[in-house]
Length: 137
Image (cartoon, rainbow, N blue to C red; front, top):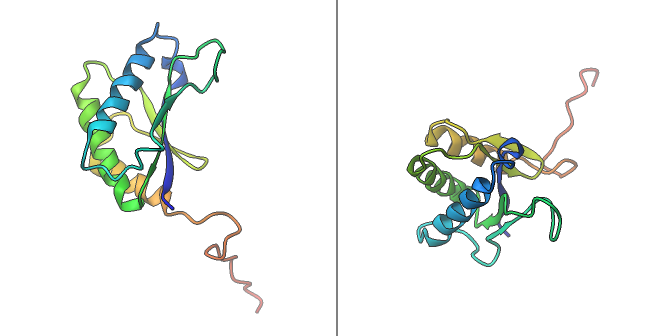
């Protein structure tokens, strides 16, 4: 099945005269060429959060699906290598479901562990989520 992820440029950086679109384009190319990543290449896409034809339609996020939670570590390491190659990388975050993780300045090892932990969280209401025990029983 895979884990759905989004890499998003911070909206405050989006008014930068096109630099966020350049950054997303560069990161997209970087990830697409990384042969060691376990990405579903058919799901890798750079899109605009504003939508087609709307103002601000420069790409500001990348959607992707990784094969499993272990692959998230490789994605983070690849992202950090890209980030370190930039003179002024844009502030970015990783989104897994509705949870966001800032990718700004943290060491790759910490980011990889946090991202994998986020992806392993069970869905609300699933059988893996157990209600607290009743202390009166």
